[in-house]
Image (cartoon, rainbow, N blue to C red):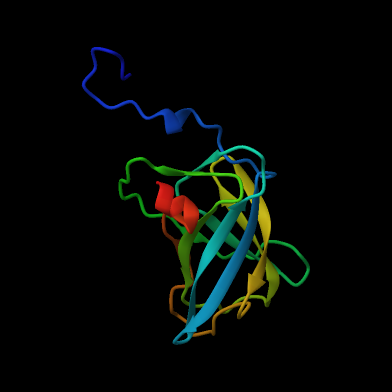
Length: 155
C-alpha cells in the first residue's frame, strides 16, 4: 500500500465511490460494419458526486419479450492502469463495442449494460442486431471505458 515511505504514487481517485446503477444514464449506439455492428456504450453521470467507473461493460441484448438473449460478451484481460475512469457529475464515459453476428431470437431496442458495481437498461440507437451468417461467431466484445468531452480534457 502506498505510504509516505513508499515510492509508488498514491492515486486519490481510487477513493472515489464506484458508480452504481442509479448514478449513470446509459445509451447503446450501433452502426453497420459489413454484416456486423460496431458502436459504443455511452454512460453519463446523472448523480451529484463523481463516481468511479471500472473496467469494460458487458452488453446483453434483450429480446422482444424483455428477457435477456443468450448472446455473450467476451471480456479480454489486457492490463490497463488504472482500470477505471472517474466521471464527474454531468460527465460522460464511452466504451467501444462490437457484435459481429446473431442468428437467434429478434433483439429489441433495449439492452442490459453491466459494469462492476451496477447495471442499467440502455436504449438502443441504430440497428437492433447484426445480420445472420450461420457458423460465424456471435459474441459481443467491449473495450475499456474512456472519458469523453470535458472530463477527458480535465483527466
